[in-house]
Length: 162
Image 1 (cartoon, rainbow, N blue to C red):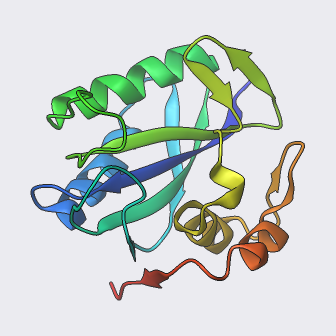
Image 2 (tube, rainbow, N blue to C red):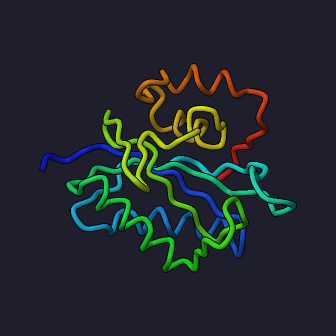
């Protein structure tokens, strides 16, 4: 299989979120048949989900992988598990969340694997870091990242200093 450029969204709001997101970015580069190409700055965003919880730290990483989308997702879930991720309640606080946002220009709709990631096109906490490292990226069937980000400007996302 030829290498595919993919984008992974990272987020955390439990434990030490900044450190966890940075360690998770490094872990992406250790996935077999995968190379880390770029990582965005860290961003702070308000949670979208269940009840009161701490703000999230988010980032996006660009990778090149020889893995299928399904195999890559399995590796992402394994990294989440290593970081103590539990999936008891959807939208609840988490030690690490890794989402396969884009896998080349492919549109995939399988059980437990939807690419582009659902709702990524309307979430500034995904679009801002993605636009930072891939300003010309396109979300299949949704449009250019820059235009999608402009449409979500009412959402508060703060870029953090290094």
